[in-house]
Image (cartoon, rainbow, N blue to C red; front, side, top):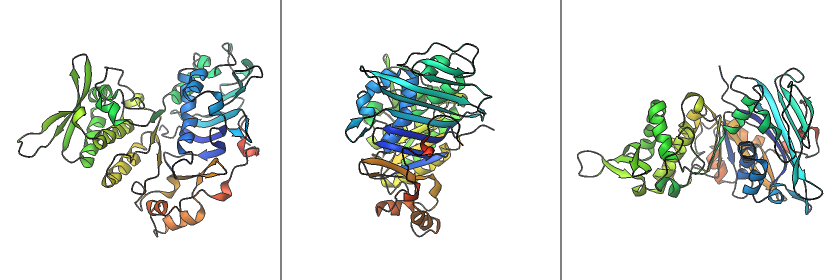
Length: 400
């Protein structure tokens, strides 16, 4: 049996608004809290790892405005930043991957230290690289590293490290844009949906060919959000492509066909969310899907459909969503253990499970999580506050 939880634990220090966080994740995770508290910054911890591995560390930093915009300023002075991910691969092997990036005295940046350990420490594949120099490694010959790149990029050429690289780069991050989905699209690879939905027509064609049951599931959920829509498919428009919807129209004997440019923002965004959750086929599915505010542009009545889709998708891949929507969480069946409250204290992001009073209120059925959110009563447990200098925030080495 394979695991559907890729990332079990995330530790980060000095990353954007996060001074320190130690967050344990399950199959389904709701990051809830007001705007501006740092929910997106937490997702960007994971997204940064993917970007730095798929492209380069320099490009990942550049996309975010450079090192000075990524590392947190403490007391007005720039600092380094560090990330550690504790993971479980689909074959159920556990491990961790960690690195610290900081400024060089003469300018620029470098990976000060990077460590990967897969399996039992001392027995499985592993390495430690400091400033581009391999200090320890399990490989017969470890590939050359440079201080300005993550060593795992080159180490992925070795069979023992490739599964970690593949898992971490398979994560998908989505902030679906109806305008992008509506526009004509160039035919692209359809195995994985891109972050804004810019290849959704190709993804629907891929699903129709390789995962017809998943495409049917997307259409079933979409019909619950927009009852008049009976199906959607990819169609060619010259050398471009778009989506075609079959929709009931008053007075028509058969459903009419409309291209994506005739559909509402809510319909297109709902489709994008559903495709993100059920995309791919077999091993082509992302190991983790993260979606920013899935409730945006949707009618509140559609929240229950989205919530059910999120829950169902979490049985096949790990799901993380950010939200400040009471409607999305307005159900007594929402598991309190899926909720992570996000707030700010003195400008720093705080992420933790709900405080005990809120958990007990939800467990007893006195309020739904959505009702507590509307009352601004979903707050992080203060007992689980993180000291950046504590042993709990150790990024390297096996946990004691």
